[in-house]
Length: 448
Image 1 (cartoon, rainbow, N blue to C red):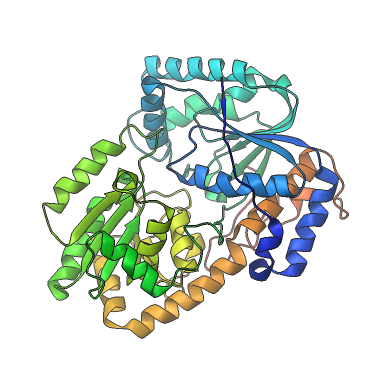
Image 2 (cartoon, helix red, strand yellow; image 1 turned 90 degrees about the vertical axis):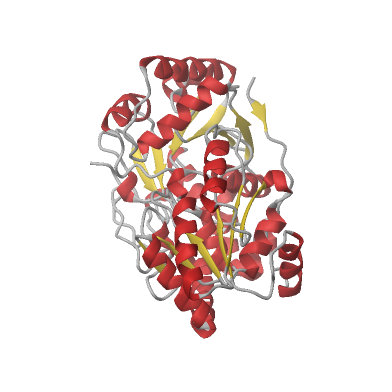
């Protein structure tokens, strides 16, 4: 059986003071003709990753505006998640494809989960490759289907994308963070929709400096010394080893600097513990490196505290679908240094809201500059928060989904274009260019 996720309640009205009264009224108006529509989100895990984090806010807000929406988790055992982790890595450019046996395992679990998916949905939203075969197996179970991709498909392993494409190309709708991620050969409508963060979630709500320092101190951090922080899964694409290398270079100039690598272990990431152990080994017992995860009682409030207290927040990814932690850091007005890859440049304007880097040496130089010049860090953080407020908060993301629902369910939005209308903060793109956030690359809608 697919496992329904139990969710709390959220009220769109609570975001009015952040997002704006007129903008909230626009969302309510878009939702009015969608009331009672049955929508299901299907994903691989309910915790430990960006997809789950997004859905814990998005689904309750969809309910608040009147949509009859559920979130269900697929069933899988170890052999399935080993195969899908390998698939994830290959789709982001790793050289190793799945074996024939692993592809067969992926198909078998998709068949099992497709049988267990209830029917009668107006829209079924399938998240990422793990359950991607569902549409082709049980198309009759939903009036419309949408495949939501959260990973960087800009340079996929050719064999892997070739094997996956037959399962995703006929989805009536697909969603990608960036136009560069859209593979050739899709037959349905393509939407370009960057994700967003929840400013009212425990991870992002306002935390006083004293409270943030107190929480960090509980983990052994010296709150009177500089602190670098990276929050992410323990995964080679997040490059925690490279972050340690950058920290060591900073420490040559600033012996008082500390580093915290904070992550969560996800149920659909069987490699996580291996890479966590590799990270610990690379730290080589340095007492100023703190490697923490959810098994050390690190939850949302603790992550908030580490980001809020940091002198610099880092996300030195070498592949990144979007990177919610970037917007999380900027929302807290923290100076940011991150990899110049994937969705990170969409959030960071070089030298204005943060710095984009390509090596541990560049990362170290930027971190050292910020630590040496607190006024620079404050200016970067102030501009970064304004950028996130405009482009990357959850009400905007909800609005984009509602526009897509109008289109797929044949509801006239007034202008007759529904989700086809492009907005300057990265809304949907359907055959037309989207005006991206400042500093981001231009985005095209339909796949070639």
